Structure formats: C-alpha cells, structure tokens
Amino acid sequence: MKFDSTEEWKSKIKRVLISEDELRTEMKKAGAYINSVYDGSPILLVSILKGAFVFMADLCREVTVPCEIEFMAAKSYFEGTVSTGHVEITMDLKHDISKYHVIIVEDIIDTGRTLNEIKKILGVRNPLSLRIMTLLDKPDRRVVELKADYSLFTIPDYFVIGYGLDYGEFYRNLPYIAEFSE
Ligand code: IMP
Ligand code: MG
Image (cartoon, rainbow, N blue to C red):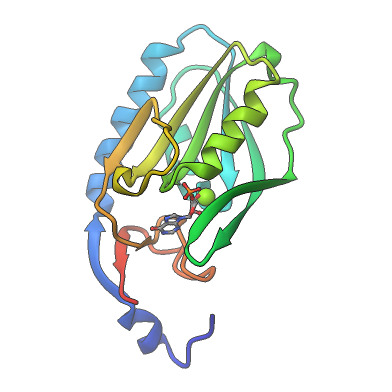
C-alpha cells in the first residue's frame, strides 16, 4: 500500500461510522461488564495484535478490578479478503493461563475463522474460564459459528478502518471508526 499524497490517503476515508464519543460511551459499559463479572478473580486480558491494540489501551483503563494484560500475535491467512481459518501464532503468551479467567480482547469478528482457531488454541490450555470481547461484530459475514460474549458494536458488511483497524497497514491511527472507500 502506497499513497502519493495525504489527500489521497484522506480520500479513502468515506465516512465516520462510529465516533470518538460513541467509542468512549461503549468503552465505559464494556469496562463495567468486566468489573461486575470478574470482581475478585484473577483476570488476564489477552489482546490479539495488531488490530486490538487501541481497543485494549482504552478498555483496560475502564477496568477497576485487578487484572493482568498480555498480547498475542497471530497471522491469519487470507484468500482475497476472506480468512481461511489457518492461523499461525507468531508471538505467544508468557503466562500459564490455567490460573486465570481469560478474556480475549479482539478488534473484529468477521467470518469468525481467526478467533475460532485462537479460542481452540487457548481452550486446550485450560483457563479457569474463557470469554471473548470484541469491539466490532459483522454477523452477516460469519462462516463458522462463533459468538462473542460481549460485543461493543454490531456493524453491517462494510470494510472499516481506524481505531486500530487497518487497510494495508494504514489508518490504524484514526481516533474513530470509518467506512473505507475502495
Ligand atoms: P475473520 O477470521 O474473518 O473473522 O477475520 C478477522 C480478521 O480480519 C480481523 O482480526 C481483522 O484483522 C480482519 N478484518 C476483518 N474485517 C475487517 C474490516 O472491516 N477492517 C479491517 N480488518 C478486518
Ligand atoms: Mg485482528
């Protein structure tokens, strides 16, 4: 991905889908959910890089009970724009998760293939419990049955950018979520 100018980069941002204000409001609710469900438990928030890094940073500051934070990096293989379900862990957790209630903090569930694999990989390590929290859910695109335990926003089948989500590694730095103009 290469842009000839900032104007060209900007021209692909079609419209704001979820504003900074809306993100803040839902972030507080998501934090409150974690605070109420897990009070008193050993919690491990696991974010999948890179897409969920902004979400994790904002979410964890709404958590007011003790928690630890970890990152995993996974490479999903794609056929065109659709993931194949083949996932390779390129950076693994350093924790023995059998002593934790694990919450996977993900940016978006599209076909569901990537997270389905990660859920299996973590599941066999016997965490005390395993839940999925996703910033965005595109249920129309699902090909494997996978439901998040908590989803902040459900969106139609648009390709979205910003707030950690990329197109060709760009636009992760936008403070809002926008529809991408192909
Ligand atoms: P899945 O395996 O189809 O659920 O793919 C999930 C991954 O595809 C996400 O973790 C994102 O990295 C990427 N992805 C899916 N939809 C979008 C989108 O609209 N914008 C940016 N990335 C997306
Ligand atoms: Mg991702």
